[in-house]
Amino acid sequence: MFRLALTLSLATGPAWSQDMLTQCVNQCLFEYGPAGSPAYDLCVAQLCMAAAPAPEAAPPPTPSQVPAPALAQPPGPIWRADPTLGTAEIRWRGRSMAVRCDAEGGSISVSGLGGGGSALSFAVDGQRLDVPFETRDGTHYAQVEPESALLEALMAGRQVTIVAGQVTLTLPLAGSRRAISEVMADCDPTP
Image (cartoon, rainbow, N blue to C red; front, side):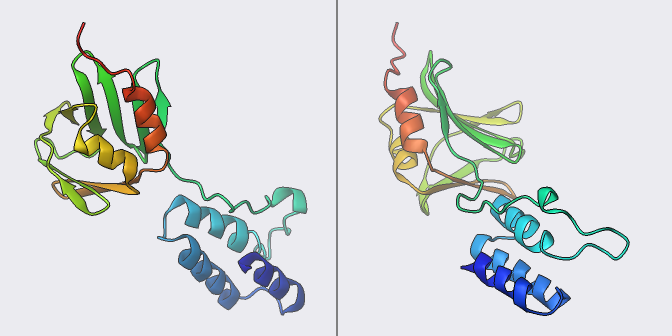
């Protein structure tokens, strides 16, 4: 609907104005915000900036230079499993969270938060879960049982929020059920 309205205003209205650019950016913010999110940035780049005229000195872009909008599936992080490494993981903007099956059983690691020895606060869909984490080399680790309440919440929830000192990380849990289940299915630490 938004692309259609934008296309009609470009085809029938006066030359592209600053007001139209502002409207386009605001619409992207409304539909794909917050500002700075990958989906918002893509919307502004493909719909607003591509439609705005180039400065007077530069020739207008040819159709082959302007990519077609592809916003049906906004980009974003998703959980992925690597059973050969025994890891289910999500990475986003230099930070990551992983669930592993290793010699000691199940573990969770969170990296990229800094915070040194700061305690972590963990919440899935707003429900706080107390998990004792230890910090080594800037990464926070916790041992978990394969059937733990934390893993169940991670597989059933929509988002996880982790707070370490002044740093807050919120990650989607899209794909977590499949990825964590796949990794933890055969997790048996006993030899």
